[in-house]
Amino acid sequence: MNSIFLEGLKENDINKLLIAPKSDLHNHSTKGCRREWLSEKLHAQIPKPPQRLEGLAGMQTWFRTSVKPFCDGYENMLLRWEGAFAEAKRNNIKRLVMNFGTADVDLVGTVQEFKELIEGFHKTYCPDSIFEAELTYPSCRNVEEETDELDKYAESGYFKAIDICAGENVQPFEAFLPLYRKAEKYHLIKKMHVGETGTAEDVRKAVEILGLAEVHHGINASTSKETMKFLADNQIQVNVCPSSNVMLGFVKDYKTHPIKILVENGVRVTINTDDLLIFDSSIENEYLKLYMAGTLSAEQLEEIRQRGLGICK
Ligand SMILES: [Zn+2]
Image (tube, rainbow, N blue to C red; front, side):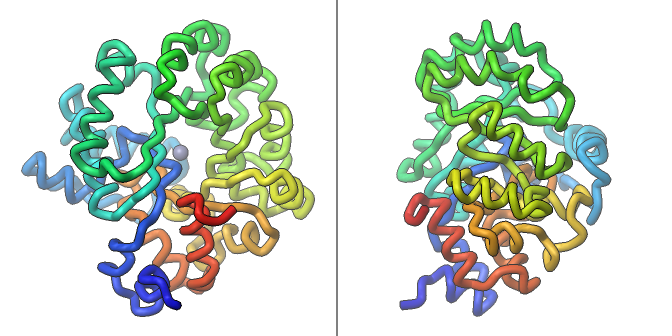
């Protein structure tokens, strides 16, 4: 029996793809809303991004100079969070993981106040969706200080995962061990941005040293058969964000996106948006792009969709 998702891909029918239940497991909350949604709310026209953004630095510059002027400040941060949940409703995202920096949590007030705010959006827009909050730390942070402060956030039980973002190889993987050891005590799922710009060897080392269960991006694992076998054997989930990779210039195009190699080598991948407000490609479009480019078959994409929902491993 054909699922509505398979039909949507094969018929290039956006509405069918929107209806099909999906997940988004890598979503930076403050950039997780749709450009059109935010433009409408602000009565402004937030510009479309250029096709290429020249790496993480280029992305930050674009956000700071071309997007942030329309939506700066605390109230607009809340609006952008709200928009991420509105998108979950529009796109039938049944499992949503969003990451938050501790500084953003602190802006709201206590962790309890933060939780009430976020759960308000969750209940308003997509009460039937599973939502998991993830703590993310820029890789340049003082690990000792963050480790001391982790209890404050983790004690609440609201955060389900921990992540390091914003540039690889800023500190050695071992430097993050105190933070990840403490995260274990709170049963946080251990994740990290690695293998987006770093090597396959970096991916393997990060998983081994920090005991990661999931890798954000991880695309460069595709350059090593050994690393891919290691990821497959250890059932490490790799949360891939195709448009992010293409627009930042880490991958040439959709057709040659390394997700194909990862899938063919048995790596458990999911497909995600990363920063929807910047990359301007919502989740149904990420699947469609890979299908239209011939990167993966409809059936392979269906399996990935199901994995994201926890239907298949
Ligand atoms: Zn990311």
